[in-house]
Structures are given as structure tokens and as C-alpha cells.
Image 1 (cartoon, rainbow, N blue to C red):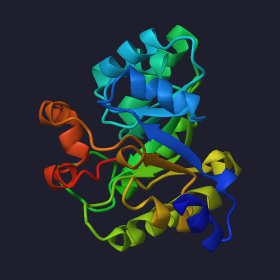
Image 2 (cartoon, rainbow, N blue to C red; image 1 turned 90 degrees about the vertical axis):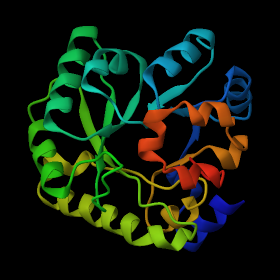
Image 3 (cartoon, helix red, strand yellow; image 1 turned 180 degrees about the vertical axis):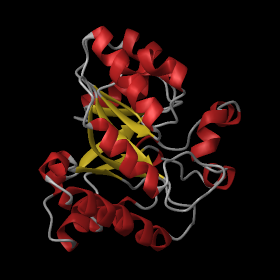
Length: 243
């Protein structure tokens, strides 16, 4: 298995890496098959799509991950629906999530989506904003920042992502070194279907894998999914290599 080989090459145990099966745009049969195969972490891009799937699979044991961009007006629905939110990109969104979580008695784990490339088509916080979000998290009551997430610029060459994965790990280590309060930043969400092996070698604790597990996504779903295009350029989708 590729993930096992990548972990071994990096001197890591595969148990250190959480496989998030990206079920966005796939139907309930795919969700049920993934859980039956032992995959209990599922990733979705859209809050509404996830809510529909959750309602139909409420008897299954699943940790739901929001991996797509989160609009601030969806904060309440997101904290009620997801165990992990990978896309915090501002202090304002962090505070909205904290208030919403307190109101509904939930404590989701949060990751900061970091913009390391300055791409206009992608969301994410630049490094100075990441530090402001971390500082603001000290006053949160109901949510906790657990780590960082990155979406590198698309390239057919997985090695092109290595520098971004490495910088994300370095940034996490720098933040952790700032004091004991930062010691809970133990998660790095990085790597998708085409480059997860490189991500594991560079320290990923979560890899977001969709097409490598489920096959190519339905064309109609990709054509009508604008938020997904923001985080996955059209060339990536056309190659069938999206998360």
C-alpha cells in the first residue's frame, strides 16, 4: 500500500496518519461502503450536502470533516454537524464558530487553513493572520485550534507540493515553540489523492483522499460545485485528481 510505504520511508507508523475519505459529491452508497471498509473519517466540502448525508446515515459511526471553505453565515450549522473543521481562515470566523459552539453545546476541533502560495483562487490565512488566529484562540471557550491545513498550488508532479508541506510543518513547529499553550497544535492536514505520499513523508497527520478511493467524481457534480472549484482548480478536476 502506498501510504504504508510512504510512512515507512519517513520512519513513521501508518497509525500516525488519519485517512479522511473525501466523500463530497458521492452518494450514500459510497459513504456506506467506506464505513463498511473501516473508514470512519469522512470529508465534505459543503455544509448542506453533509447534512443530507448525515441524516441518512445517522446509525453509522462517522467523524465528519468539513474540508471546504466555510462562509461565516454557516458557522452555526457547521459546528452542529462537523467534528473537525479544516478551513478556519480569520479571527472573525474563529469567534463566530466559538459562539455557535457554545450555544449548541458542541466542541469541534478546528484547523487553520494556511495560504502559503498567495493564490487568488484559494482561501486561507497568510502567515501573519495565522498567528493572530492562534492568539485569539486563547480566549475561546468551546472550540480548540488543533493544527494547520494547506492546499498547495495544483501540479501534476507530486514533488511540487513538497515545499508547501514542509513549510506547513515548520510553521506548526514554530508556533508550538512559542509556549505550552500551543502544544495542542498536533495536526497537519495536507495531501490529497495525487500527493498524499509526499505529505506523509513531510509529516502529515491527516490526508484527504477521495478519487484514489472512490474513483472519478460525477461530471455533473463537478460542473455545478462552485465552492469546490475555489479549492480545486479546473485542471485538477479534469485530470480526475481532486481530493
